[in-house]
Length: 126
Image 1 (cartoon, rainbow, N blue to C red):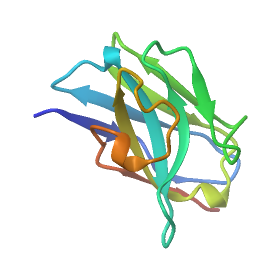
Image 2 (cartoon, one colour):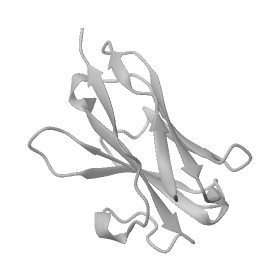
Image 3 (cartoon, rainbow, N blue to C red):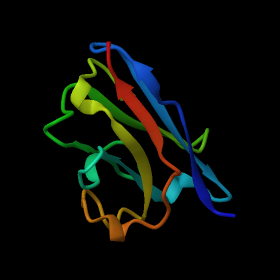
Image 4 (cartoon, rainbow, N blue to C red):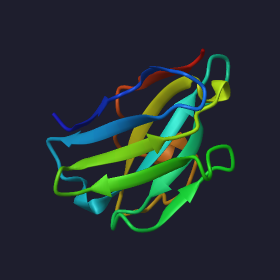
């Protein structure tokens, strides 16, 4: 079964750090860009970070720019979202999504992504 498997997440204090992982299962991420989305209660799913298949070009939403870092390690078939200086407003369920051949590079239209991770809860609270 082809899928993205997420890990990481949990409860973190404001100002703290957390790393989310997104592993390809049954397929290689080498030809896929990766996007991270998040969805807070009562809100729409928001695209926050994007990386191209080459693992070099990245893009961030203003809400996370300078605090979050997206990366991709094809040798481990895994993408990451490093979250630093987290704020209470970062509380949400986080999802990774795959973009074959970067066709949907940077789009926040969720219908354009082929595979999705199962989601992981991040709660920022003291």
